[in-house]
Amino acid sequence: MSIRRAMETAAGRSRTPLGESTDLVLRFLAGRRHGDGGFVGRDGASDLYYTMFALAAQAALGGLEQRGEAAYLRDWGEGDGLDLVHLAALLRGRACVGLDDWDEAARGRVAAKLAGFRRGDGGYAVSEAEREGTAYGCFLAVGRIRIWERRCRARRGWWRVWRAWRRRAGAM
Image (cartoon, rainbow, N blue to C red):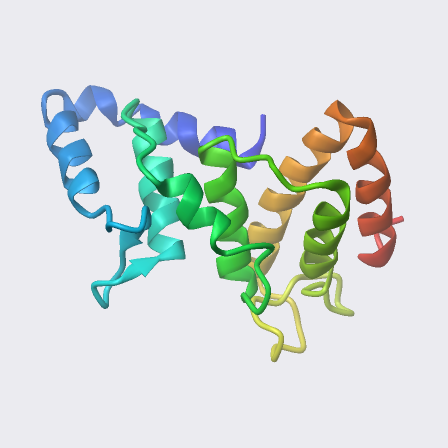
């Protein structure tokens, strides 16, 4: 079982103790959706990190309604300039809504961005400025790598991207 699936399963179990309040939670989340398809963060604007959590929560509670989220996520392109936290949020958000429209070249560039956060200690840094990996960086990277690995096995074209990424990351 993937980390993502384990987290969704655990969060999905909250439906039982929430009971009738599940609808209240889903309505709250829907109320946090911004007009551009993202979900509102602390500053009142759409935020990629908050969007990922809202999509994951809706999916876990059985209330994922796509209303512009795919367009919002597409607007982030291939995640140029994002730190690992936000790149991982972009990839997880895309997975939540089933968005899989990158060609092989784009997938390779995104894989290279993930690999770029790998540090000499074997871990993953959260930002470009960090010189060593962190536990949180490793958690984020491993979660994204697992998604890529499954897709690589399912698609022949992904296999080449995956192998190239693993070589760049020093895992092969």
